[in-house]
Length: 88
Image (cartoon, rainbow, N blue to C red; front, side, top):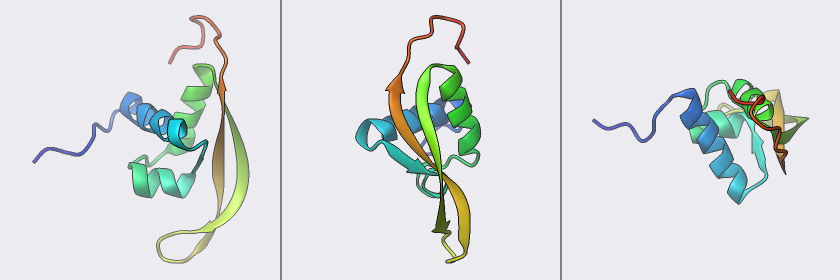
């Protein structure tokens, strides 16, 4: 069966950017549960190295089982062109 998306790091970064184009906020739990990105902080770090300005705010939110966690809420602030040295 065909998977709904490619699980490569570049595909995960593209899904995050697509989300940010519609909504500037994405939490760790949303990235995992809704976007299939199991290590969102790694993808956010890569996007930052590419020139995307993304802030991290720490919040408490429940997982699917209702257990409260301290998680990252990533807030997209735009893109800063850094030339070629920021490529991943």
